[in-house]
Amino acid sequence: MKYLFICLLLGLSVAGSAQELHLKARSRNALSGSAFAASISDSTLSIDSREERIYKEIHSGNVPGFYRDLIQVSDTAVIKGKRHTIKYFVLPDFLTIGSDSDYFYCPMRPALAQRVADLLKCSLPTRKVSDQVYRQAQVKLIPLPIPPTKAMTTVPVFIRHNGMVAQQRDSVLSDHRRTLVAGNKKDIVISNKIYTPDHKSHVVIYGWHRPGGKAIQPLYNGHDAGWADYSHGVRLVQQRIWVDGKKTTVSKVLRSADLNGLLSDEGIIDRPYYPKQF
Image 1 (spheres, rainbow, N blue to C red):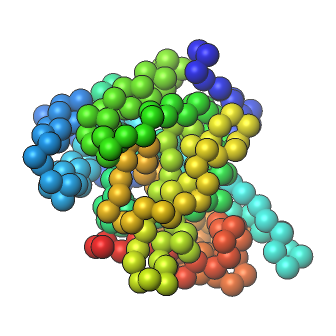
Image 2 (image 1 turned 135 degrees about the vertical axis):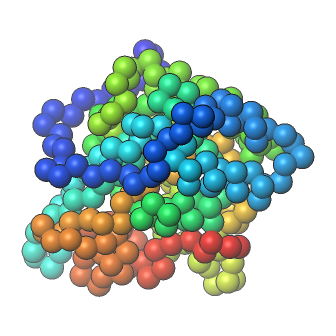
């Protein structure tokens, strides 16, 4: 319990019409999280091959059942003197492969994260969304960093950190459904820092909030788009959102001269996505 900071948000509302992540039903023969992790642990397996396997598992529906119930997050902002409200739906935790009882967090490069987001009609979060998710999370886990080494981008370290986080998470959650969890990974985020004047794309990361809400990782684009380490997580935001009660999309709001402040603290984000190749 000393590793946990739990915040029960009284009165956190659930959407009037529940939103779900639309995936195929998980097969009875699907690999458990630990079995899948073992299957990609071969050091001779290329990153491209590893990520194709990750995509295949997600596409086939090998995702825990509790991930299919999206969680509502709400926010407000005063823009040009007018108060606006926004409602969007997010994964209850960072994306995993496997079953409710045996799951594996899957660090991935941003091209794959974008591909998965598109498959599931979702977006990656912005820094502002990451902060808001943490504020409204019912369970706030304390970050568990592993000292950085060259091995931090390898599957054995992914597995090690997965075990640390899963033990921490499961110690306070007997029922995963409808529970928003944060603090356990850094977000791969949408940002104007993805695309730089050198015409190269970068992975932009942010988050790993401490109790109190301050992020360990400031907005950072120092790694190129080929980087993925154990600390990275993929939190999806459903593209379909509601602003002032009207249906719209994450992409439209981020590109809006008037409404971008509901989702962005960087102003307009004209390219709210990662390239699928780098």
